[in-house]
Length: 193
Image (cartoon, rainbow, N blue to C red):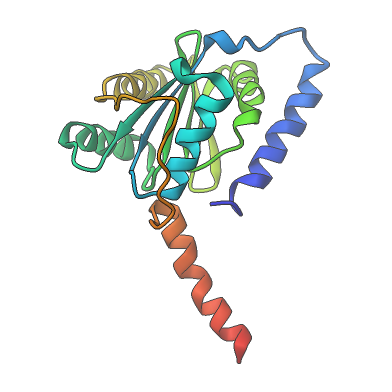
């Protein structure tokens, strides 16, 4: 996961800094909320489960565990069908009640203001899936149907009750990280020859 998103985050930060000079919009952290579908054995999920509340507060974060929860698993399947997300964590970000981004995998939490600003500047929900970025325009009827469904899915899971400390299991591999890991093995083997 680490190799896929730094370029994306740098792009967002650069674009955000260029756009900052164009307006006086200011990010209000009290209006942001994060919804995460994850797995307790996924190190990426556990990192995000820790970083987001540390940065924005526990009241700005809702976590949905997939292991052993059929309700959440069914909702995640629906998110996957709509977006193409195949791995966890799957994170939805709302700002003032508007779904501004859906992100597959880890991301730089400090880039949240730029992500929110980019969504509003482009008048659409940003979708970060499989290392690519898409925009679902808010003025497109078909896209708004998808956005409304996604927002409903991110709001309707069965949340895990979180406390100020979250456990971290670093022994698991999940979603895209497993695919990346498997893709790297042949390259490493070739180099040794």
